[in-house]
Image 1 (cartoon, helix red, strand yellow):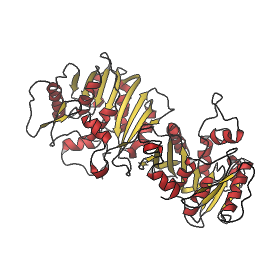
Image 2 (image 1 turned 180 degrees about the vertical axis):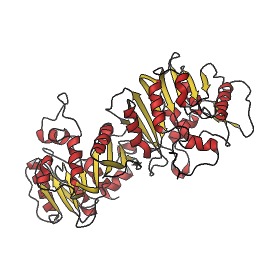
Image 3 (image 1 turned 30 degrees about the vertical axis):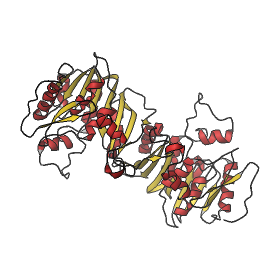
Image 4 (image 1 turned 180 degrees about the horizontal axis):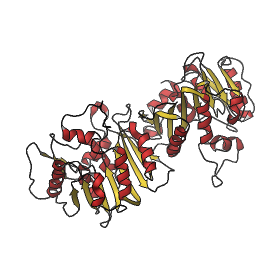
Length: 251
Length: 251
């Protein structure tokens, strides 16, 4: 690392100390949260240099940046919002990862003009969680609203695009809300993907799960879903648990 | 608590100290295990005296006996094996629960001759977990093999019978293996039931789940599955966790 960062107003650089990755953030348009860290930790990407990874709904590129140290494969960040795609591009330079990573600033629904079907080994995605209902309260900030609500892309589209991108037996890693798990399973099934592993994320040991990490395999077997050990975010005294501190800081 | 128990050879009485319930057990034919205790704890049965509960695949009746203190409703134990149904009947007498509980010694597939469709408020079930494959290693003891393997009834039949028994909005409580969760969800959907709540049971905090507790509602909404706090069976030093001790002993 690396070229001098080129920061716009209201941007800052956050560092994930476990692996020294630096990410350009902006509270005004997009900041990665724990979700991005957890899906990156959960993701088991293809490793070889001749393999290809897509980070769909990449935002400021945090997830792709966080998995880069796990793999020699090419990582393509796909982000529809130009300002966020630009932040991702500058973070790639900041970390000196321009040989491994690239950004496509386009609507994921148009991706097949740039990335061929059945050509990707791993898709990872931290998509908008909330349906775009007329009744749903959205952030008046359009950048944040698009990242949180299914305004530009919905869950069915995310899953269909991912399945089409993947080679047979390619892997899809998704973080989402547990209350949409039935829907996710049904959509995965329709898209010829089967869940292999799941990890529930519980805010505290005595609270219901508020996130779910999902690994699915294209043309995989419907049998044998594994629920990995629970990931509990906060321990006593509302401090991050040992597991989360390990993921964040390598402690 | 109550009539003098009438024990056959190789039978013993086990007591669940949290509620003082006594259960006739026999290692030779059937002993309840932690599974029965956990599904009984998880079950939220209909409460009123004019309501009706069915404990399907009841074995020696442990689950029904453990939920009796939660409800004034009638509890019907359904068990195909005569020797186990007889144990259940004697345990009911032993606990003085003969006004609230009864045993039907029949094949669940024949239950509609005795219990009308759409007449039950709560079905609870701790079914055989393992498919009856030619390749699967079964216990040479036929009593135990029938309790563990889908020899007399399979998952699809259990779910279909439960759905048919239930009134609209009636609740179904099931304990099973997490690796069959996809299949369970698909079968529930086909039987017009939707999962409402789930609780994963992990043997230890750092191990994958080995049981799943499921609450489904007949004609319920497919939206909004909740994953309740993780249930971790063993804590440090391989002792039961505080949660399990609480369930077992009310500690």
